[in-house]
Image 1: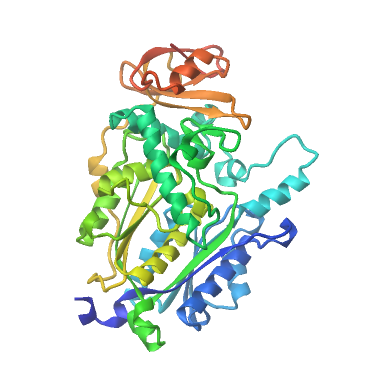
Image 2 (image 1 turned 135 degrees about the vertical axis):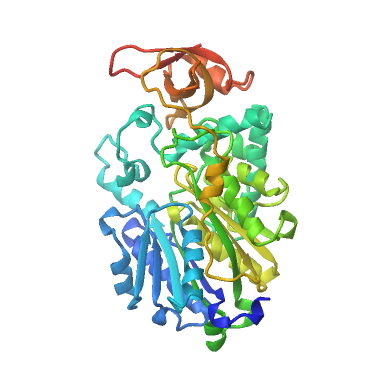
Length: 501
């Protein structure tokens, strides 16, 4: 049992902090460094004070809102007046907070650190308002997500409009629907139910950005306040990045927590983690009907901690877009009628790019302190690329650290053959998956088809917005587009391939 182990090698969470910044004017807003500092100070207060001053490991989830501040580590260290020996700043991936949590647990257990602080913050709302004010006379509307330096690149996928996660995740949504033998209406109803539960959780969480519950129908029905983004997703089905939020948490050893007088009921125990990834190029995936790395991450985390869905009191299933918690809950066996969040989801809780799961960690700690039990955190990042799951518990877990949470070999073993990519194909083809991207006024901007050639190769084709018949075929739900055949035609050398029914 864990209490029989050396308490100096048992990692626990002792403090959490969350910050929402709603300035009267953007000039008064906190930048990401300010949000991070405020969150860690709240976490230190939550732990009883004194931990942050003695922090010897600082891990930061990278931010994109204010690129001129990057890297932010030294700025945050200076602002907090601390001197950690170990410092790391990760890319802004959705799995970063949970990965850093597992790494901190290992660092504590191995004696490499005594007190670890993990934090992130984004001020995209304020940054956008400041940019908009400067660009008021310009025709170009700034878009921090699409303009982020790590996304400014051109290539085959980008030429067809597959640039940011909003463009790509619908490929999974539209492929999983027929795989699960759902109609469009049934799939949307599932999304609406999950997201409505998210809104209900957010409505009761002081740390959430939007605290208003909405019905399943409100979630999936397009209107002037819920415009279509990328089929079949509406604004209320995608991550809300227009937030100013910071969150952080403090990890130490059970011995250090006890030495500093932290109450037993405020200590949250860390269980085993598991992680795996897909290829960073989303066109180099074996399928869009599921994710081997997602499946392995969840199943291996559950197995390592010797728990089933019935043993879990709470879960946080990453929710940038509905396809992710839909896939995750099927692997986990989590019922549709139980909330899949403790924070409120990335739409309602808030979607501060890579730092969402820090808010989930903080909210999971809060709910476990209040109600007791076990909670699973599942994180996803990139373009359905990075996955990390970890268990938290109000009681000792019996886990022995440090641990190797890498499950890449198991994920690779489940992966099928990745189709060869043919960027110059013309001729007959079958729809593997697809989406339609929309303008802000709700009109179609373009459609994109991921198709398979008769030889099984993968290729892309566009659907012009004026091809109303094909756009309707892809979106009206009367017939299932996936699996239907058509023709891919090409014009000049620099022109996009076009899908013809």
